[in-house]
Length: 479
Image (cartoon, rainbow, N blue to C red):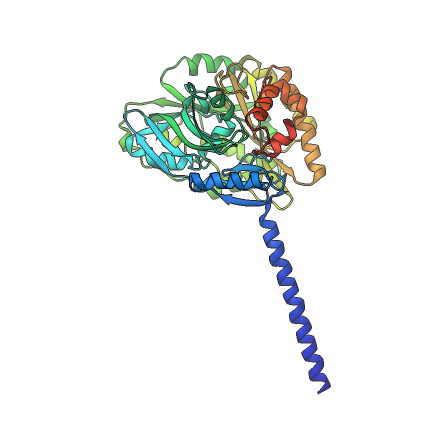
């Protein structure tokens, strides 16, 4: 009898203990859901709430609720910016990915109207039947229109500059809950502030985007001397009207560190686009992830991956592909979820003729600092100073770095030291760097790279004096 009582007591204690653990786990899970981060995973932050915007009135109510409760609003899309641009401590995060309808395609005008939470993939699906294509976007098509506008992306098309060039107009909900029509002739200052404005001036609603024709390209690969790249680009690429798209990579493999370089040029053809316009999904996902895995953790892996690329993209190799399919995902490189490390992006803009010297000095710097660079893509960015925070004050080459780093504070500080040295080198050569990534650069470096930064942040406070729209980027550089 006594034994039975003991067993009963033990069972009850176990149930109580289990229930306590369950409740704690449940509460922790709910709490963790409010621990917001982005794809870089370096700045996790507890937010007040995440709310999805599906209708204009609903978005207005969310803004009003934030004002009544003296809370901030952060605006999020796919959250591929990596420096806390889409959230803020104890703020309401407005998730715009559900505000994603394609409203209208006007084939004759080559114009599409979409809600800002739609992705480039949504746009491609809508315009492909009309043999139309996007002018400027990132290489993958997974990002939202509003997010792409907020960072003023650039792309592969050498005939079109940053995204701001192909935005005709948009509707913006400001801090008062008013809906403004914004274009180059109406609320023109906001046009220059919101494009490349990192969600600090209001909620982008519907967007009118100018399109171009979808065509079939003949893709050709060439291996070149990096020291001749500026001259090659001017004479062989820019001067050739048949080339629309261009991309290049320079080796990060230790055996050919920042010396080997190959380019991909896309030549217009007269082939009927209807023979090639079926939208294709990404190929070789597992293979590409495996390759990045090898590069991530060993020098021999980097050498092997570059060897494979040299075999795959030999001089003179050709293939035919539609413009819309060129602008599909290449490699799903930002979904790495390491326990102790993460992949981040950094990007530097270098004037044309400074490219060879920049590469030589970068090579010396990186050999000393041992930064784990997985890939460097080189793109052309033509001069465009329309946005307040413009990064191309002259024709530039953009070097997009994919970097693997640890997520401990020590590793963050170590990577930061190297990044600031690269930024110093870039600024010394009259270059710039891209703002959507982790805030390693100092405020002084930021203001040097973006001379209108102080005025930009001043305009932020004029349009939003109570700072309803907030994020960690503004906290770091603007307040």
